[in-house]
Image (cartoon, rainbow, N blue to C red):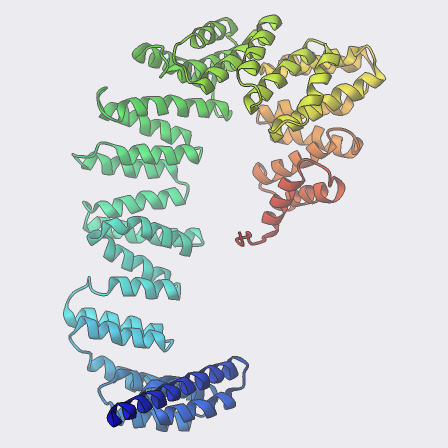
Length: 605
């Protein structure tokens, strides 16, 4: 019983001592954080005397911070004599010499450690880690490189070296190490791409990678990971044709390649609007795959979709339009006109209606599409809305309004219904029934879709403002016809109609509306320099009218996206913020302005 009580008392005393040490340690750290290094040193010294090994690092670091190099040197040498096999004490002594400016003494210690480097991967890694922890990444790298030579294995320590090169932002070192590492570890290629993309910040960096890859491919042309990385490099440099050429060359060398990599690359090309390169890639897949193969149908569909995107972005010729029409027709002839191909029928109809102006053919195709059984409700609604548009353009307003109303009723309370209602209101506007149109537009100003609400507000204001000066709406009726020509994508007829307004009704109230209509036609035609002229005239001569804030914002986007004039763009975005704080563009203008100003993105959320 006496011995048991003695044991309990000993445990309590030891526990109390440890708790006291923890309190002292926290106090010392607090002093150090507050810059009171001497107060911290007094505590560290007391703790060191109680337990040399545990508190050596803290105490020696504190002495170095206080520039008490002689004390630190004596302390370290004492530990070296006590533990001559422990490299951490020699490294710390080297740090003291470096701080004193005695680099030769420090280098002598480090060279000695290199000479005595053990032929043991774990020991080499541990030594490199100690150098890194003592803020000497260069020596850590040198240790690992020496270890490779000593063990005659260039694949050792790759993970450690990659981390160190990344820490040092050593682009050449990191690049070469990844090229050394990836052939044996190809699953890390995505990680390598992400890391390099984060570190590289100029075209010269990607040129460095390309040069290194080409050298490696000369020695080892069959190394697939190098070819894949070269394709990625071309993509980063926006050299899309080169990226595809490299990927195609790689695909042709692989007998068991089904083309998935080319398919994924083509999707990336489409996302970057490199439509011609993507089309070439999809066409390659169609020659590589037979009809029954997994990628044949997706490639066929995506090929046509890509050609359609090329057309809708305005980067096309008349020959492109006719080629796309043929592709859609061939697709439908090959796979039939069913629920699974109705999307192609819809796109072909839009092409025929808006680009080729084949209204009768487009109408017939959409009438067939909406009668297909088991069509997805969303797709059916889209086809019906498009059919209503074609009826409108084909001078069948009654059929158009009936079709719009069917969609509105079938999808009541949804954004699709609001879209249908807006199209019905615009139909009334086009046909000169301004009173009914304005009533519908006023309801749509509260639409859940911001785009529809904004468009409804603008059109309602257009009608209201111009009916005040001209209650019969004569000038507005001509303007609405011009607007319909714009909708039909017949700009020449629209411009003639717009010019006729001033001739028939001089001093009309539609001046800013006519300027905005002309600007939109010019933008639709990709004639951006010409579009600047009417927009600036709105800003100067009609600063308080309906389209003023729209014109300012459009000028900002034109200068930013098409003229690459960030300073001028920034002035227009700032003008929205200062002169038009109630504009619907205020949020977007602030966002663009901050980006152009160079603000860092908010990551707090």
